[in-house]
Image 1 (cartoon, protein in one colour):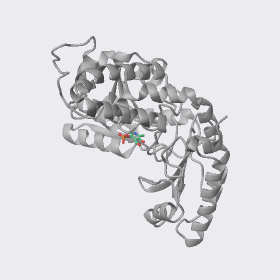
Image 2 (tube, protein in one colour):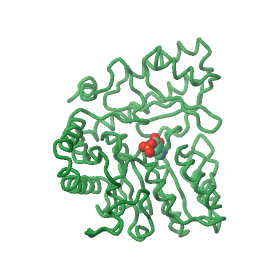
Image 3 (tube, helix red, strand yellow):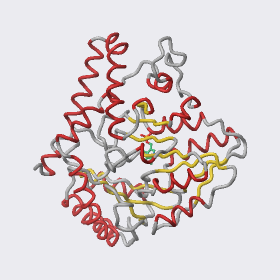
Length: 390
Ligand SMILES: Cc1ncc(COP(=O)(O)O)c(C=O)c1O
């Protein structure tokens, strides 16, 4: 049985920093990182062969391994650089018309909100952000709040599976079922999902789904996926058109041809899915993740109390995974973050979402109770300076 200390040694993370922000940027364990660099070296050794021959074979292997992990067909999922890329690709392909509506919540990721803002400015469509009352209490209340925004102009529902600043798991399974009954297509932003909570695309059956592999799956940065249901694939155009469009030698899947290769670049991060999945098996990471979730939940009441705030959802694994977030009161959030990182060596995000500020801790296999005890002690010290009001 590996201790958290043993697991910490598998990562390249600076040991002087208490790293509580795996949610923003995952870290890659050395066995996966070594393979990543091996691919980069193989490319430099023989650029032509690696790019023109090996890359497509290795990408296929990665795609197949990923498809098995997230339960979909390998022809329906393509590796992309990040979820932002997938959101841009799909948003730009929807052919929105003036008055069309994209229904979402007020708790989505800011970068994705910006994609929809721009598309709506350009097309005259409307981005409808339903207010979700916090704390979340029941899945039904959430679903009612979201669906009360449906009109006969709703063209798509766009929804996080796990939110960023508020770190909440949304009841996407029930939302997808309800959207289907209304005949509204649905796009799930699962940036935080792969490797964090189980994902079964086949049984969820969304129209579109994107997830990051470079967060909780621990692949190198620049490795994510875009799933599109078969019936929509002919209308989802590549963001960067390259040789795969009107391919000279088409494969069995036009979707893969259009999106898989976007010109000359370093594909190494995307090739590492099989190694990342092997790493999970070798270290029984599902079991480790379970322990992480328990640690998150066990410490949540202290986090809430020490910050004089309120948890954003019931302490239940339907709503909470390996991260938890609470609203904080601070007049100087940037200085607060700076103090946490530079004075106390704790990497933890202070995130603004709309008018509120949130502090979120993420727990990965190398974190332990001592990390959270240190956080709580430091919060007490900082409270005395007035940087946090609690
Ligand atoms: C909910 C959510 N969606 C989308 C993204 C975008 O991910 P990326 O910056 O890798 O494109 C993030 C990033 O943290 C996120 O938290």
